[in-house]
Length: 275
Image (cartoon, rainbow, N blue to C red; front, top):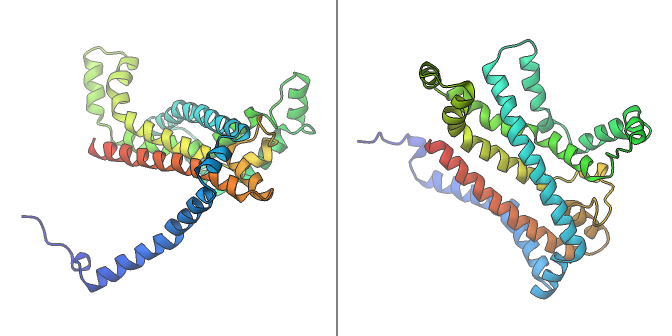
């Protein structure tokens, strides 16, 4: 027999009022703005919407947004997992500081990220001048976008994988060692299957965050159409240029992608909880 629900959780007038208030809050802050965006994006008809969303400038912006986000997600899947492994399996001086630094991108405005990269790779800075002398250009090019996205997405894979590593039973690894398995074999056959859902979850969150980034990108990319203009920055430019309909059309496509990624994250979380 299941235990009775606490009194505070039993449905009643108070519970109905709370649910109504929460529903109204979400509708007011999320559903109504989304409806306004959809209405504005489709107000001129599907033909105009599709023309704006598939213009050469928009397609180039989407392509740049997606491939840079994909590169960043791939790199974070590898190095984020390695970082989580080091934080869990090793004890060393500065470990707590390293763990705190990983969360730093959550605490600072992304515009600060862009400014840091400008101060590091700017043409008047020491490192920027040296790279220019070598024929290497970082600022106002795709590498600057990738660096900015890497900085702001550092925590996702690390924080997704870390708790799963902490929960692993060391007895399985000890048994594999006893049977003569190598460290690489143990990682590939014992550890990786257990942490794979967490890696996928963190990677998907990283990708979703990267495609939505604006603050750091608008500072370091140069916003050159068909070269360094990402979709979020394109939306901003359309609004500033007096074309809210085009901005809404591009926003709807990004919104659809974000919804798909959100559903994917929920599915991976469900799979992780079942495991």
